[in-house]
Every structure is written in C-alpha cells, then in structure tokens.
Length: 292
Image 1 (tube, rainbow, N blue to C red):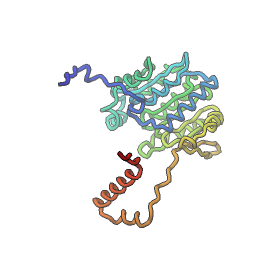
Image 2: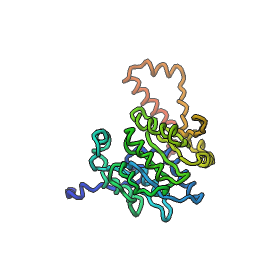
Image 3: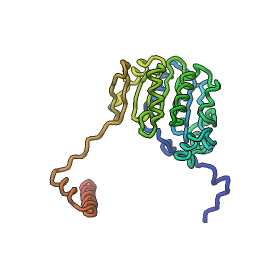
Image 4: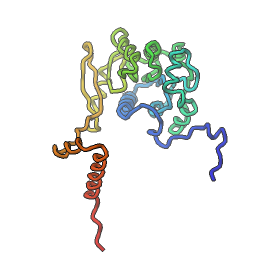
C-alpha cells in the first residue's frame, strides 16, 4: 500500500525527465531558430544578457539558459501565481493560465536542466520599465507575456531600451486570430518605431533595431530544408524578411476505387475496413517465422 504524501510533498512539482515534458507552446521550429541565432551570436563574440518577458513553465527559458556565456545573466519576468494588476490581464490569466502556472513549477522545471535559477522578477512585465534592466545590456529578448495591445507595446519599449545595437527580439503570437493586440503592437513598432523584421515563423516574429541583414545571412547558412523546414524570402515595405516553416508532406495517394469505397461505406464499416487493411500491412511487413 503506498505511503500517503504529506501536504508539502503533494505541493512540490515533479521534475521533468526531458525538455519536451515541460508544458508549453515552444515548438521545434522556434527552438531551432533560437538556438541557431543565439549560438551564432556567441560564435561571433557578441556578449550580453538575455531577457524573457512571460515564461509560463520554463520551456523556452531552459533553452535560453543553455546559451548563457560566462558573465551573462538570464532574467525572466512573469506573474506566475501572483494577482494581475488590472482587470483585463486578470481575465486573460484566469482563462488561460491560472490553474497551471506557479513559480514553484517553473523553478522545478528549470532546475531539472540547470544548476542555478535565472534572476526571477515575479511581477507584471510593466515593472521592467523602471530601469532595473540596464540599457543596451541584452543581446536577445523573448516576449511572450500578455496578449493585450497596451501591454505588448510596453514590452516592446522595454525590449528596445534593453537591447544593444544589433540585439534581437522574438515576439510570440504575432499572427494568431485570438491575439490581435500582439499583431497591432508588432506592426506598429515596424512601421513607426524602427523595428526591422528579420524572420517570421508560424508562431514568432524576430526583429532588430539594428542591422537585419546580418542575422538573415546567418540564418541562410543553415540547410533548413534538409531538416524538414522551408525557408523563403519576402519584402515588406522595401525591407527583406525571411520566412521559416515546416515542410508539408504530400498526402498519401489512394487508388480511385479504394478511395470511393472508403468514402461510401458507413463509419462503422469504414473503421473495420481500415483496421483490416492495417493488419494486412503489418503482416506483410513482419519477418517470416523460422521453420522448426
């Protein structure tokens, strides 16, 4: 019979065994882009701190911590399980994050892969406008906090002040239909605030207030297509921008009679037919049984 947990043990989050065990929406394509850009900065001798606004349970923060060089600092700012400062932000938290987002869970996830925690600011990201992040001190900023326009615009202003000349900012959810406030703040920064697009992925916008051509050249050096991605180029108001996406696999072609039969059969019969066909394929693929 198992020994009952104490209250303290029950409240302590279990450490993830692998990085994909950390809940979140930081997918393989953007993990590859982050790693490539951060590693290229280090290889070129670019130094500076890393800042993350909105960390959720640490999936992206763990990767950012991988790329810290001696003397560099990672700072993460998130409400975690604190109360939001305004009604709109509180409603967003209650709808999406309140039941799962705790600082203790973030810390357990981060310490599963790093010896020391980053500097944690448990507060609304707006507090960073007070100057606690030294101007021009960062080489990379990741913004994935509130989806409300006013908050995102403020986060972009914090990033601009924190980034050194050619530092990079990555903004999440710049094109999702449920986050129009992020889109408005991002493209406002592009067209009126001097933010230069570098790279677009399905989830994130990458930009700089410095030289966009340099990180784009670094991105082109990698054979993305060999890894299952596509890379293309577009122009926005005279500025070049790269687009990185997943390759779309060609659909499996079925013979016309088989396709028609599957479409016309009732659902129960269709499921039974698919199971039978799968069993036949597995039998064909199985190695022959040796004779006695």
